[in-house]
Length: 227
Image (cartoon, rainbow, N blue to C red):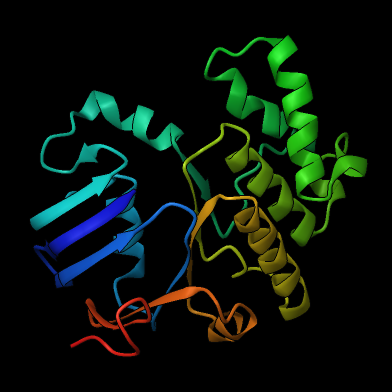
């Protein structure tokens, strides 16, 4: 599904953000990527979405390779990724239902296809009763649930969450983690990027990839520490 092979990413002014990073995420895995600020987490996300290309090495995402993908193919790749951000990025003048529907509308889906799928997806994140609320009428946790539903509605092969609890208080953050765990139990792979190490203890079966200064220093799929 997602393969990083000897990946380096160097920026002209700041030097290496990632150095010799290799890992393979498989279907159905729940994986945390963690590490301190500046460890390379944001760069890793940008490489997954092909916003950035590696300086050396290869990134493969569901059949697309960083050294071969054409610019015009990147939107198609991103539609196969369900992406959740820290700041929700909801359309403020659209209801929860309309925010989720928008992700389908841009693909050309018909209203007959959109409406039932949107309602099913909102139900999956526990928001059936808030479908017609605007973002301003929802709590931060509810807004993030809408964002998760929007990421899920196109049936991605993986849910990629970049600091999804960063703007939420600890109790709500745990609620959102439970949503991700429930989604994973239904078979969806989850890659959750976080600096909040307390979340890791709430999902002891998850894989943990820890970055420090651009290198993997721990991958629990290969043992507690990287060699």
